[in-house]
Image 1 (cartoon, helix red, strand yellow):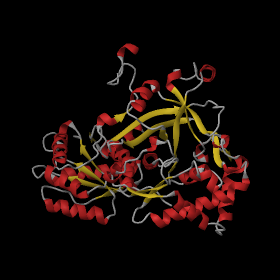
Image 2 (cartoon, rainbow, N blue to C red; image 1 turned 90 degrees about the horizontal axis):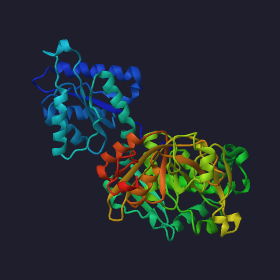
Image 3 (tube, rainbow, N blue to C red; image 1 turned 180 degrees about the vertical axis):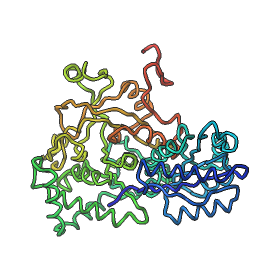
Image 4 (cartoon, one colour; image 1 turned 120 degrees about the horizontal axis):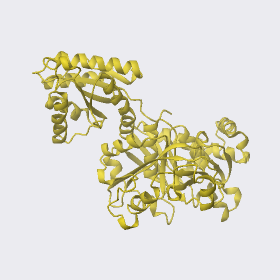
Amino acid sequence: MNNIPKIKVGIVAVSRDCFPASLSKTRREALVKAYCEKYDAADIYECPITIIESEIDMVNALADVNAAECNALCVFLGNFGPEISETLLAKHWGDRPVMFCAAAEEAQDSLQDGRGDAYCGMLNASYNLQLRNTKAYIPEYPVGDAEDCADMIHDFLPIARAIEGLHNLKIISFGPRPMNFLACNAPIKQLYNMGVEIEENSELDLFEAYNKHADDPRIPEVVADMAEELGAGNKIPSILPKLAQYELTLLDWVEAHKGYRKYVAIAGKCWPAFQTQFGFVPCYVNSRLTGRGIPVSCEVDIYGALSEFIGTCISDDVVTLLDINNSVPKDMYKESIEGKFPYTLKDTFMGFHCGNTCTKKLSFHNMKYQKIMARSLPREVTNGTLEGDIAPGEITFFRLQSTADAKLRAYVADGEILPVATRSFGSIAVFAIHEMGRFYRHVLIEKGYPHHGAVAFGHWGKELFEVFKYIGVEYEEIGYPRAKGDFYPSENPFNC
């Protein structure tokens, strides 16, 4: 299943009628040439219609980019630009992602007849966008030459994937959250505000569907695929047929229930009754679906699944969902981190979950029983978890969340997984984020975030921040680790 959008950006040049339209056209052509020389030409489409002052130009350009099957838009101010028709274009583009950028002046010798004043035009464009309550992505410095603007469009692609993905997403959940698990509270109003659909089901519905997949003829093929993926890490091969049956149940449910939506994420139930009734834990299956780009969150964490999907779209890669779980012991810090990496003890923590991280992101892996659940249940009903240390490298820890009173909040933190053996169990790693201790106290605790955080592999903080702004998270509600000396509003300066 192709579960994230492929973005095709329609580039539409605009021109104010008292400026030469040829200036916008030649600058658009130079931009397209620069993009194709540096990036994949399939990412973009050059609209041949230059919008001047006429609203009819806008209508014709809109029809052209729609006919070219574009799903994202770049309004390019080749000169000052017509503030009304260019922002009408963005407005009528609807919920699909749109960006604005502007052409810089080329040379000092062309400042008589070749000056475009797009630097000024961006101000009027932004003002008119606000008048029309129309969202658009505007780069940090939105004015540049052809190569600069090509880079801006390329930087827009992961942001556009997330925006387009959200407007075509359905989250499928199974079962109410586990008892005493208020942290997974999920007011759905903000999902609808973002254009996300949700289908909430009983775990009994899932159990019934699972039982109907008994003796499914496809099970042996899935078992063989699982065995090949696990290799020597397949510690309990006898459980694979049940896991394969469950995987087919979920995949068939997705196909039967996604409806008119193109993309799906799943918020699944995994305890307390799951193990005793199904006879296994779903962790490994969850990891496999997430590895295919269909994020599956644990513990019916709807906003966790949403966050994972956003991370999948932005990174175009596998993600995971982890507990912000436990502190790093001082002896481990002194032996393996201090003096070797530029982090204090309070900068470090362990991210963990039972076993939902894809094998592609683990340094090693074993499919076995779930240790925590086996403390209170027969071990044989806790088989199916995937254990291993998560591979070291750059990561971004993040989450989008609705509060109980339906207010959107988010946090973003770039960091890394350290090459330090965890000596523990589950899908787990030692994480390091500069000033994590202060971030933990004044963002995660103070703002009431649940213990689950999504993990994207690589540094994607810049793109995630822009997506959160685009979908309506207020700037002051986007948390991030502040540098030493940059106090949080509630931080006691006498403690520093």
